[in-house]
Length: 248
Length: 254
Image 1 (spheres, rainbow over the protein chains, first blue to last red):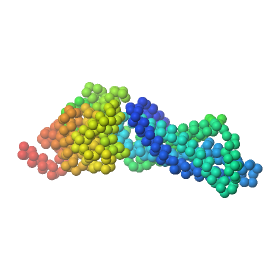
Image 2 (image 1 turned 135 degrees about the vertical axis):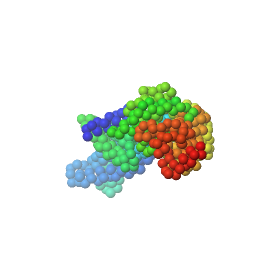
Image 3 (image 1 turned 30 degrees about the horizontal axis):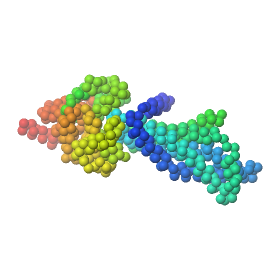
Image 4 (image 1 turned 90 degrees about the vertical axis):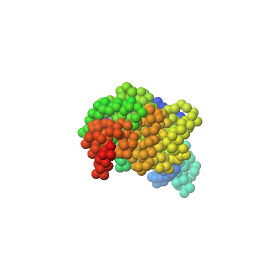
């Protein structure tokens, strides 16, 4: 078991080393990066917006319920929704969802390419397949996912507003007062650090799983599942480590 | 020329290749034949560098392939074309993009120059009008031809074909065989074909190597297949009573 874990970590590191090597042809990598950006960014806009609006709404409703009858002022709901979105829900929940959507897709794509001998075909042409197939995905994700997370944070704050202000839980002015209170710019930095790290995890882990697929459809399905499971575990672990490091 | 020297390959406890040595000369269609599980695919993958042998060496014109660094391997690979069993065309790319892919990756020519080369290759394999189609929109035989066009687009010195006829009807299989042979002769390529199609053996086998249980059991040309007394080869080539009768009749007729 321990040997297996070390073996897989070693293979993951070696794959990354192969991935971060000099591209054969920059324009081909650029084209592939643009395609990935569209896939990851545009392709995930609706799901990210949808989960974010509900994340914000649920947070606002829950805290409104928790604060009911306490001495804590109601405008704190805006403050809590904002910080919750920026620090935790926008980067973490969004990336967990993206690990399921984007990560499983990447593992399946690479696994299928391995099975159909597309990767072998590229290897024989002289292409560094790890670099050509994985590097554009990493670059696209590390660039696009922080943008999606930013959008998620804004939409979550909007969701909190929609769930409280129209039904009279608190006024728009109170919500805005909460949004403006106790703002720490370093929380935004933490959000971007998290989203970049999570983006790296949710691309490299699925790519690793897909790139080395052996066997048939069952193994491909397993690789896709493993990609999501391991990405999620590593994202949560990284979330904890970043929280400890940046708030300590 | 490609030369394999004493190739051994072991997967865990299984010896797949047990010391295979062969030489493949340019301008000839070299066929590797054998029963399923004889080690043909493993041997081909070792020759092309997709698998590393447990021991032994592969020489490309006096260059020991497995002693090369990555850059040198790439230089050799630029001289290699390969046709895969399932064609291995990229689904998301059109036919012309598939054929142009190696040029896009490695050639410094203009798009017009690359397209001209793509046009020539597609015309050469008899597929002039399918540039804009996706692989899923053309037949299996056409996919193989596109695979050949992609394999020759960089004007390789070495051409590898892994079961080029699998899944094709006999007529189309024959056309693919002829195409591979013609291209081999035209460009004086070293062509190595992995097959268990008997028609291919009898039609285009300039140099045939029969692998049996990881060993080279017989080597010769298509003209020597009928008269060979090698029992393993005859058991493989003329497996059915009908084919045995056919062979006897052919030998009697001289």
